[in-house]
Image (cartoon, rainbow, N blue to C red; front, side):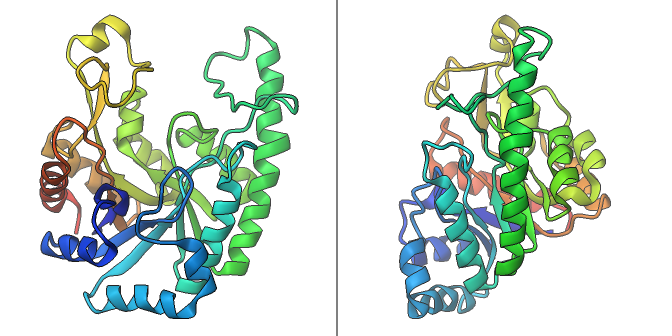
Length: 310
């Protein structure tokens, strides 16, 4: 495995300064954000699609440092009719084709619960009550998500993209291995999971068991940790609606790698992921708001360098 970096965490640095910072830390891969919920601080997709010279400047900056694009990231909700994310996804595919990038990291999307709704609806409660929820979930999958993804897989082949890695994020139709396989069985093996252990942990799942179940459906891995906060989970459970900035009062928080699970846990996680056949990029996604960006990035990279299976 090789260590890469999801670039938004250093979005305050200009592109080449960001690359130099990563090089100092021993990171040679970048997962570049292109749109969706990201402001895409380092890549201007429209400008790059319009200019071969600007695309060559990006590639030259990477090649001169011995660095590579691990994937393009366009994480958002392409099934939300109120967002521009469907267009962003199509542009990310075009840009991947121009750069020769074979992997897109994104999310499955979440549509409204009926043709008359305007707000996406994450149905995680039993569909037995109220019974109308089953019809809503069937609509989301069969009438919106699967047709969209069949078309997106076909478009990816036209652009030379070989893999979609869908993050198991909350408020998405694909949020765990079971839902990933529902989509994968419908649209084919181009779709796999971006295995992010942090989300599975706060949902109460075991990422190591999930890796075993996924096998070749692991298309990408995020090195991202979470901490279930002592005492608070026992009182209110794992469902949390407070803003991520309210770290002192949340039941769980995203934290630097090693500040949630210890390094022995991370060694086992990566060992099992490698054992199941994945031997590609592991991207640090640093979203710890309990410390400075500099401290979070530095300590997370040190932890990942000690634990990923080389």
